[in-house]
Amino acid sequence: MNELRMSEEYREYFKSLADGLDELYEVAKIARRKGLDPSIDPEPQITHDIAERIEKLIGPPGITERMRELQGIDRRGMAFKIAEEIVVGGFGMMETEDAADQAIRTALAIMTEGVTIAPIQGIPDIKVKENIDKSQYLAIYFAGFEGRGQDVITVILIPAFTIIYSIPSYLVYGLDKGKFQNLRKDLPEAKRIAEADFLLKKE
Image (cartoon, rainbow, N blue to C red; front, top):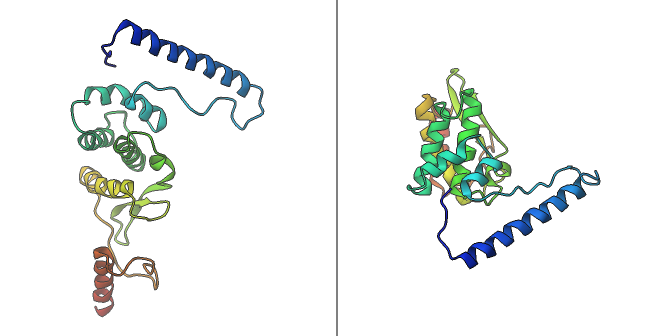
C-alpha cells in the first residue's frame, strides 16, 4: 500500500486515531467472547483501502495485491480485468458455476467500492443452467428489480463471462402465461420477449 506524504504532526494524529480504533476493537472482541451475541467475533473488519475491504467482503483470497497492482486503471476496467482473471483460474481453479459466482460478485464489489451489500444480498444466487437442447446458460437472480445501477453493471458482465466459457444465451422456447406480466410493456426487453413468444406460438 502506498505511503502518504504528510507532516509529522499529521502522522502522529492519524496514528492516534489508529491506536484508538485498535483499543476499541479489542474491547469489542472481549465483549463478544461473553457469548451474548449471535457471533463471538465483531462483524466489522478493519481494512486500510478498497482492495483489502473487497477481499474481506467477498474475496477471492489474493485479490488485495492484484487490485493494488491495477490501481492505475479505472474501476470499470479493473472490474472486467479481475473478473476475467478469476474465471481463467488466476486466483485458483474453480468449477464453472463457482467461477461465475465469484467473478460477478467481485467485479460488482469493485464497481461499488465495497461499500454496499449489493454483491452479497443483492444477488441471492448465480447458476449455470441448461436449455432444453442441453446447452448451458448463465442465470443470475436479483433481489428485486428496480433498475438499480448494480443490476445494470451485473448484466453488462454476463456477456464477458459467457464468451470466456463459450456458454450460449438463454433460449426462449415458450413462455408461461403471465411470466413477464410485471415487466413494463414499453421496455425493449419486454417487447422482444413478447415478439419471440408470438413467433413461437405462430410456428
